[in-house]
Image (cartoon, rainbow, N blue to C red; front, side):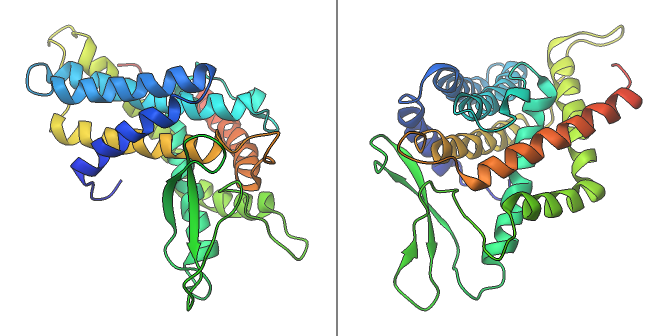
Length: 270
């Protein structure tokens, strides 16, 4: 997550509470639950660091569930193949979101020819609290405001599915699959470490619990930011976002590959 401004993260999460409070169903309840978990994790660090870290893990899972529930609720193609109760699906979300952000930056920002650094802002544009994306046009005082924020399109016969797929598949061949499998294993091991005694030891503790909780708060904030860029910008007033549509198709494909790999090479139990 890089360097995290602690105060900014906690302030942002309180604004996210208002945003997800206007969502519906599992998107709303899981989003609020994520914020409650991470706020209570912060309060527990001094008196019960084990439960603080466990709540921080739950917070990430609930934030991932909120995002996936929004995507499924809006009926994005193949979103019915995403399982809200799947720990692997939830563990993979933040890694995949980071991969798509990396693609977006390289495709639209890194050349430095057209756009400056993107900005995210709260807005009431869709009739409720939401997050919009501003792409400053270099050399001007203007910015592009995609509607929905992630409805970026391409020309010359190319498709975002091809572009995202090529970029993410390249990363998949390099590190993405192992990162996702590693994240699934790490989260499972962390839960076991925090909750259960072994033959020789009492439940353990994650190193640097305060740092762990603030990092988890940053992840929760990132996932709920994605909710704010997807859920309020929905049909019938707005079309499906092209970036989200393509990302969902790629996420489903990659999770199939990861699941198949895990079945061939199961991780050792702890």
